[in-house]
Image (cartoon, helix red, strand yellow):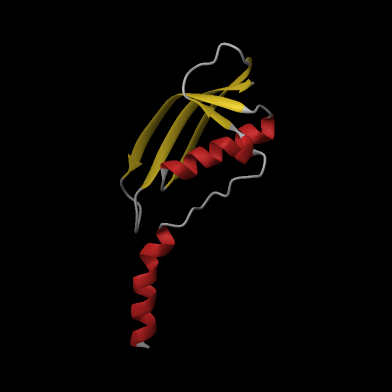
Length: 104
């Protein structure tokens, strides 16, 4: 019994490192632009706010939203992180992103 409990306690931190948001196939084809493009067609602005443990999960969540709505490229205008203090085991952050979506 003690061995099982010890094993569970040791594996808990590894479980917390697992990605919680899977990238959809269409989202994997998106291109993240480093600056606002001049030769692409602007489609729409997307404001996304979500609570996740990691920034990577928040970005994958936002990329899945873009893939559902169309567009093949995006430029992230802003991204802010707000830490939520009162969560058990690990801090959950609120990520707020403003992106411009393009067809390039």
